[in-house]
Image (tube, rainbow, N blue to C red; front, side):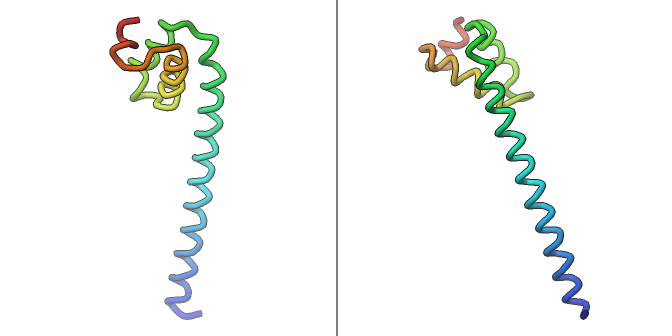
Length: 84
């Protein structure tokens, strides 16, 4: 096996590993997103607003799920959410 064949094989292996890791992360995010979406209807408006306003940087999936739930309850804008 020549040098370039070995380099090509190493690149292929690295690419396959990266693709597998990306798929695992995507699947995990989908799972967490579904879990958060299931939890949100049980929370009151103030709890949801607090999540949207304080957890967006720490947990964007959770904040997005809370915002969706608030939108379904009629709170369309961030100002609406801040006024809760």
